[in-house]
Length: 124
Ligand SMILES: Cc1cc2nc3c(=O)[nH]c(=O)nc-3n(C[C@H](O)[C@H](O)[C@H](O)COP(=O)(O)O)c2cc1C
Image 1 (cartoon, protein in one colour):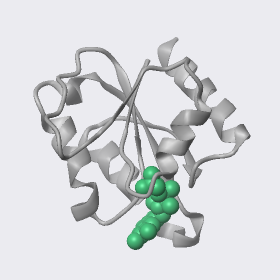
Image 2 (cartoon, rainbow, N blue to C red; image 1 turned 180 degrees about the vertical axis):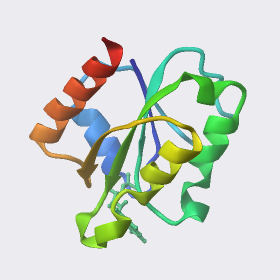
Image 3 (cartoon, rainbow, N blue to C red; image 1 turned 90 degrees about the vertical axis):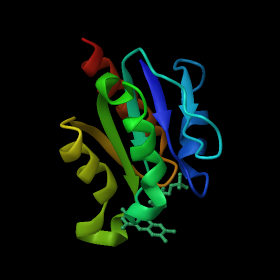
């Protein structure tokens, strides 16, 4: 499974590094042209107001990318209470795709193993 992620302050990138070489990953970069995705992928998105996470929607709406979105992982901060991972929740509804996992900041080692399990489950 390919992993596509967005990051503003680098926490999600740190999580991706913890995954090792098991997954091919792509960081959404609003400054360069988006790639056309033609294989199933999981999206990891941090949580911010919509103006900040707009590149995530732009990426999904590019070419047929959204058709290959199989699962969404939300990252955030539980101090935001009801607003925890609202970006992932909104995208899950908008793109009719399940949230397969959630964690805070750059994730713990438990989050790494839970994430891998959740992706395996999606693949089976
Ligand atoms: C200005 C700002 C607003 C945030 N708002 C939320 C929020 O509403 N809900 C939430 O769960 N996390 C919120 N967060 C936490 C981030 O989503 C979280 O730290 C995430 O791990 C950042 O990932 P990144 O470093 O890859 O961008 C906010 C962080 C900042 C700096």
